[in-house]
Image (tube, rainbow, N blue to C red; front, side, top):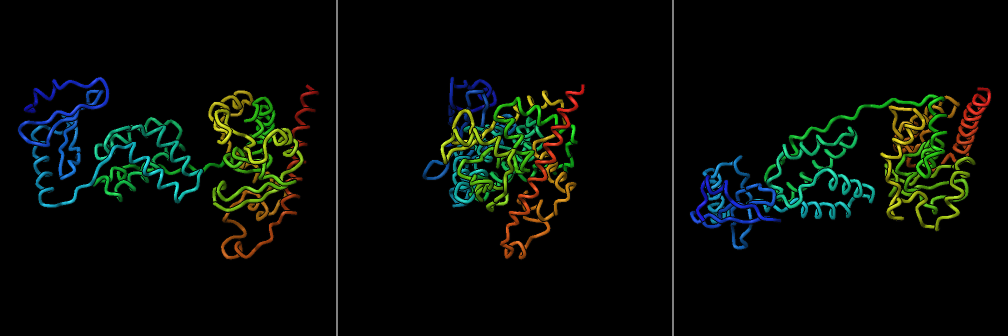
Length: 378
């Protein structure tokens, strides 16, 4: 058929997938109509009849699209290179496969989750995706931290696509990654008591929260805790799990042991202590809903689970624990002992860390006991 502005408006959309309409006036040039009615100009070039998307109608006029098609056909004749655009889902699968070869499993998991959840471009060609399209997806993400991380990941994805010559422009260059606000939230003793008490009514999530309060570890590290990581009163997190990619051994106190005792006894040696309900091979993942329940029960608002880590460090300092011991407990790379000294200092300060945990649990026990005494008095 001869494509005209009138015929373009009347092209029928398929019930599913896409339908191609070729222009009789220019071989290999045509319009692709999607199930939703989107119209995109294309041209097929080269011996393999490679599809090249020119742009959407009416953003690009028919006359401009036909002129661009002629230019592209001429370039192919002259042997000039043109990026080989592919559908987003196909590129995403290739990108994640490459990530698995060089990144930690947790990183690949986060990349997969955020790309699948927030960037559903499906079979849309990479060359058709604009910075505006990406920003629309990002603007729909409510949580600032997730929005910031998603922006970083999609920029990484399109940078990779550009390096692989799947696109000849870089839409991610126009994306602005918002800087994270430095948090300083430390829970007061009353808030810590309220959170601890409420956590007792939140099932497995509540146990995770209590372990965060007691150990100061990151939520992802506790959620992915495996039975085999715990030997006696020591827990060793493997490098594949920790944020700084190095093994981390820390002591657990009697309260933590009592919390985990039943879970450890009922779990196979290599299984996760806090496995997801949907599958036993993945860690707990119902954070958002469980946190809302905890906030409602505790009546403590405006805080995150990571604030428990900051509270842990601050309260230990108030108890007189040396800074370098706190750094060891938190598994911080920087701090009092770093650089070459950290490499050659093989002394793990296990005894000092044990003493710190004992002091913290004693302090926490008194804090909770004071609350029970106050309740009885009331």
